Length: 193
Image 1 (cartoon, rainbow, N blue to C red):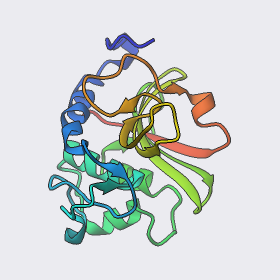
Image 2: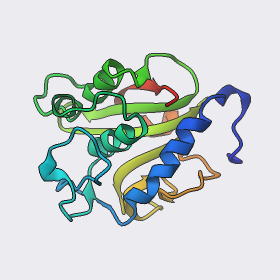
Image 3: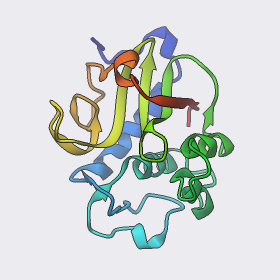
């Protein structure tokens, strides 16, 4: 069980954790869907997707939006958004490639907040999410249609826990070996903002 206090191996994650938690109120009442509706704080997105009123968000749009708010100097623009979204199907790891190019993520190993891209079937079934990792434990912040899981919530959630609200949950979403099972995945460690 996670008691909310960060162990020494997670030194430096508090600023990013606080920034992520501070942005969660923007995502209340959202549900998972493909008719994306970005909050006004999202940077570099098509203006036609700002405040559409659908209150829908998908996984990669969520990671783009929340990270653009946390790292406002990342150079968020429409061309990078398209690559993050993998619109041209050229780079299976679009979010990770863009996060590294924008200087918000690094290939460092170890514990901390990470941006993940995984594929069950390349170009057919994938998922982007953020995860606080400590050893094999993961606390996942994602946009998901989790209505079929024990959390029974569609939208921005703590995986296997429930709606993404503050404070940080005191339990983990699960362990890497179970969550990443039967997928191809990569991740980047996120820098402190």
